[in-house]
Length: 277
Image 1 (cartoon, helix red, strand yellow):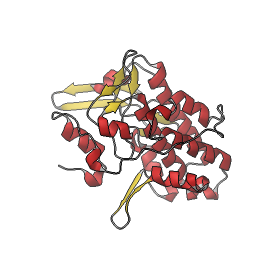
Image 2 (image 1 turned 30 degrees about the vertical axis):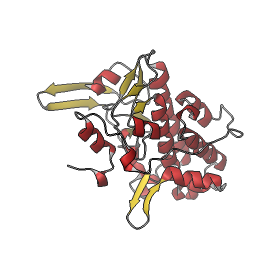
Image 3 (image 1 turned 45 degrees about the vertical axis):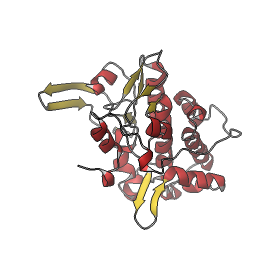
């Protein structure tokens, strides 16, 4: 019902089309347009052969398309929509690899008079903005943070978090920040792209835009329409300052939510390795 309320009456080339739905007792069904190339998770996490299908040009267009979709729901649609679960598996790809943002089941509507909502945390670990995860304070900047993580994944071909019992948790945001501080940011590019032609200047710009999106202070993150202009080089970012990124390093800091929804929200938020029955 949340999904139907959010997107049944809006249209954008980078939003998945909802054709219809059915609720019959416990049986619930949503019908979307068919996406020939599955999801971005399927491509980027499916091994080198899958990732090789995405040239730098394709990745660039995917990132810009997702950004335009978020700018549309954040700034143009009334009431505004905050998605709350932007991640690889929720970006579907059509036959031409054009991106379509999907799964609005966790979305929230923002009327003009509303600057933020306080709610139980839902989403996916690794993409959660720290201020939202810790306090439950939800604004459009939470989606901006998630997009920044997603952008890092698109450029690097790596996942937001790798859980390795030998070396501990590895956060892609933290790695990108370390590479930025060492002036080695371009080395974050997916090794698969080394076999293709790509613009180092483009890659550097996209990675810096991603780091702007994941800054710890939400007020410093750009709005999505500005993010799109930055990616398209319509705004010069060369002299812009980038501050420390926000990270959730302690699961105990995460606000679980109210008793009615905490189990489902927390379960959906956790990566599969940490879900409980």
